[in-house]
Amino acid sequence: MVKLTPSALTEVKRLHAKGGKPDQGLRVGVHGGGCSGLSYKLGFDEEQKGDRVEIVEGIKILVDPKSELYLSDTTVDFVDGLQDRGFKFLNPNAKTSCGCGESFSV
Image 1: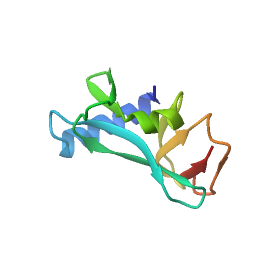
Image 2: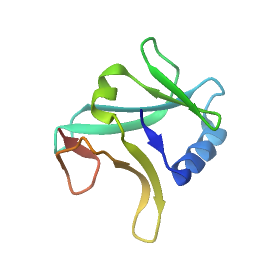
Image 3: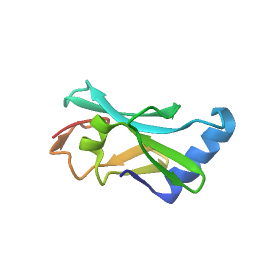
């Protein structure tokens, strides 16, 4: 399953409180595209049939079965620095990734 660092969890909670609906969870997934073949996606969504669901500190994490193949043991971090701000994926399954870190291949 996907893990969130404490800083990522704090940011997800902040964003959910700001604009998420109470019954929505954080969908973590992949889709085709990007310069390396697969791109990460994050967003609030309703639970779908077949989703793997884990609740961490009150936040539902949703991963569809296809994405789970590519995201096993992935950690999502949130960085907030002078030169870099946003969610980062630390994916041990990625063989290569692009310079921006938003796409990868396996």
